[in-house]
Image (tube, rainbow, N blue to C red):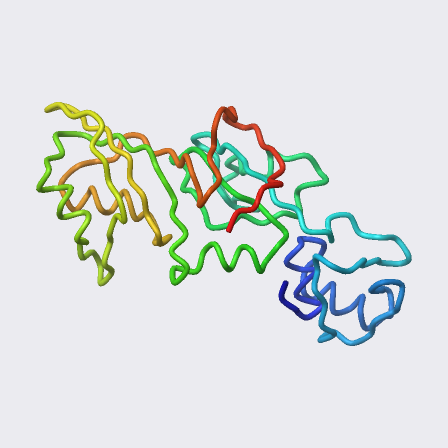
Length: 231
C-alpha cells in the first residue's frame, strides 16, 4: 500500500475538501490511530490506519472495493451539473466515499469498479500493466475480417493509436455486427472511436470483465463487495 499526505487521503475518500481538511488538521481536530496530527503533510496509508475527527472514527478509512453493474444513462461522476443521475445515486450512504476505477460513459453499461484503495486503482489503470477490460459490442453495418485485422494492428485517431488486444466476431449481418473486444488501455471512448474510424456506429457497449473479475449475473444497478484478488 502507498503512503499519501493526510490532507490528500481525506479528500480522496470524499470526507471533505482539501481546504476543509487542511483547516481541521491545523486546528488539531484530526487524529491518526488516536494521536492528534497538526501536519498537513503527515504521511499515512489510508487502508491501514484509523482516522478520527473530533474524536469520532471515520467510516470508510478501511480499504473497500465494490463491483457495480452500471446501467445505461448513468454518469460516472460525483455530481452532475445537468442534474443527471450518477453512479453515487445507486449506492448507500456508507459507500459514497468510494471512487471509480476509470470511467464508463453514460451510454456504456456493465462492470464498474469503485474503491478507496488508490494504490489498487493506480495499478489497474496504468497502461504499462496491461490489465485487460472485456466488452460486448454491437455496431451498425457489417464488420469484416479485414476490419478486425485493422483493429488488432491499431488505428490512428487524433494522435492516438487505438488498438484491441483481442477481438472476436460473434455474429454479423449487413445491418449489424456483434463482437467481443478486449482492451488493455483506458483511452477516452476508445471502442467507439475505433469503430467510428471504420465507418460504423457503436449501438450497445457493455463491459463484462475487468482483469480476473467477471460481471456474471449481477443485475443493472446492483453491486457487490469484491473480496477476491483482482491483480
